[in-house]
Each structure stands twice: as structure tokens, then as C-alpha cells.
Length: 359
Image 1 (cartoon, rainbow, N blue to C red):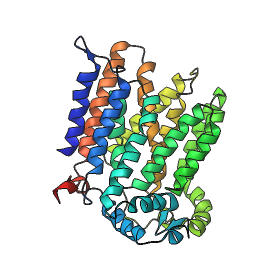
Image 2 (cartoon, helix red, strand yellow):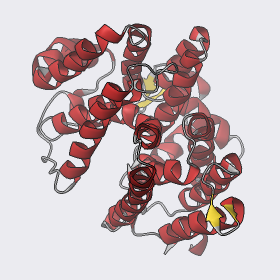
Image 3 (tube, one colour):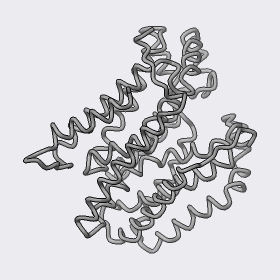
Image 4 (cartoon, helix red, strand yellow):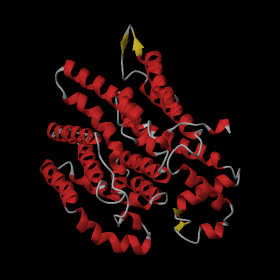
């Protein structure tokens, strides 16, 4: 029922904030709408019991260790207790207020949810569609499990906007800050290079080919980076394949749709002034990393850094469709499909919702 509260609130505030004369204007009061729905998402995430989310209980145990650790111990290593220093500093600061893990969960859930507000606001015109993508692609639910990495994802998503605003220093600062929560976010540095090359239209096909090249020769690439990751950051789980294989199931259809729409956006976006079509390239990279993740440990986690680009991609597609009726059909269908997929995603045991307020 908790997840249905999010869906119900989306439609309720759509009617309250965006309905005029019996018609929905999706761009009307968009910022208020996004903020309110994110607030509902925050409450559901913040007040969940440690049994909700595969890694939540593990984070709770680590928090107890951080509470008992000194500042000297925390600063003794970039990865103390297996967690990057940014997360450890945040945890230690929260512990000065309370040793109760749920306070940390409330704060980190707020950082993640409200931290995505600027990115969603700046990269979408249809607030309902944007929030549907936020929910349906797994961006929101991932924060129940890989909380450290999802804060890093939020930070690099906002770094993208700084890059588009020609604020390179702020871009690199946010990426560096993201690395203090999950060092794998350093992969986002390739975005800087792509952004600089994207205005040259002839480079589009070569960049797409480079992304496909990564998907084909990922094993060789990982072999090259293995010594670096093993010696310095101990991400051994990313480099061996002893974990139970994932299966794609029907999600492969979703990936096919993403690739098709991404290529359509890149082709149709040859003359885009704001470089909106580059989101299609990053969406393809997300799909390729997800496919690699079916065969190699956790590589889908690398793709998560490019998952936020699905928000501007799906938003931009509706403006590339010239037929107004087809555009509306696409928009409504996308919203419905994403929300259905969100609800289906919550049906597994790890998302069986219980609030800690009952304990």
C-alpha cells in the first residue's frame, strides 16, 4: 500500500495543480508538483524498516560501527569499514545527534530525493512523465539498497547541469564529491569529453560506435582496470564472476525500447542547440552496462550513473513526434507503463513495506 500512496499522490496533485478547465496542462506548476511528489517519495523511503531493501540492515550494522569509531579511525583510510570517506563523515556527524540508524536513513533519503529536484526540474517539461520515469526506471527503488551509490548518482546528475551551464569547476567538484560516496562515480568523467565533442555533428556516429565497442570488448577493458581497482579500492566483486547470474526477463523489452528511442532522438536531434540528444547516447550506455551486468558482477551498477538521462530522453522524444495525437499517445502510454513497472518492481520480498514507526 505504501507504494500506491506515491501513485495516488501523483494523480491527486496532477488534478489539483495541473488541471484547468477540465484539461491537464503537464507543464503547469511543474516545479511544485515535482517537489511535492519527491516529498512523498522521501517519506516512504525515510520511514521504512531495516527489513525493506536488501542492503538496509547492512547499512544499519555499519552505522553502529561508525558510531563507535573515532574521527582518527574514520580518516585513516579512504575506505574505512568498506565505505567511502564521504559516507563515513556524514554518518559520524549524524551520530553526534543520535546513535539511532533511522536518523541517518531519514537524512540520507532526504539528500537523495530532494537532491534530484534540481535535475528533474531542469531536464523535463512534463512533470508527471518525469516522475514516472524516476519511479519506473528504478532510480528511486535503488536508493533502498545501494544508498551510498545512489547519492553519488544524484550528485553526478547535478554535475551534468553544471557542465551544460559551462561551470566546469562545479562539474568536477560534484564528481569528486560523488567519488567520496562511491568511487565508481569517477566513470562519469567521460561525460565531460562527450559533452565537448557532441556539438560536432560528425562525431555522433563515432561516439555511438565507441559505446557499442565498450559493450563488445568489456572483458578486455575490465582486465586492464583490474589491477587498479584491486590494489587501491578493493572492488573485487566487480572483477570476478562468482555471483549468481542475473536474468533479464521482460526488462529486455524495456531496454530495446530505450535503444530504439535513443537512436531516434540522436538522429532527429542533429540541430538541437541545447544538446538534448546526447541523453540518448548515455541511455544506450546504460543499456549496454545492464547487458554486461547479466554476465559480469555488478557492471549494471556502473550503468546506474547514466540512468538519470532517461528522464530528459523520454521528455524530449515527445517533441520530436510531429503528429500531436501520436505525441500525446506516446506520453500517456509512457506514464502508464512506467508506473505499472514501478508497482511490479515492488512486489519482490525485499520491498515488502513495513515502517519502523510500528516498532
